[in-house]
Length: 125
Image (cartoon, rainbow, N blue to C red; front, side, top):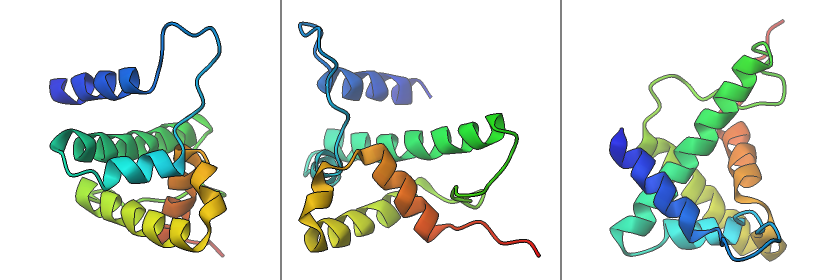
């Protein structure tokens, strides 16, 4: 667990600058794609941890909102980090090749949309 915190801090410090009073723009889908296709282990770990963080953030948000799953993904319990990573990397590759304008989308929103498409909640009668 400690390595996750250390990696998140490392990733966070990579994308923030303390010398600027202006807020930094959010990570884009293109930024995430570059991390996820990186050759080094740091980039690959940052990619996976970012995806896991967004996925867990969505789950926590749903629970905090009272469990309403309308418009949110329902990732099955036990879904591996590798499966989540592959789902997002596949969607990044396809979407950004077919829709270059999507490169500027916020990465977290892109992940949420990709998870919703891959893991929609079951509709109840």
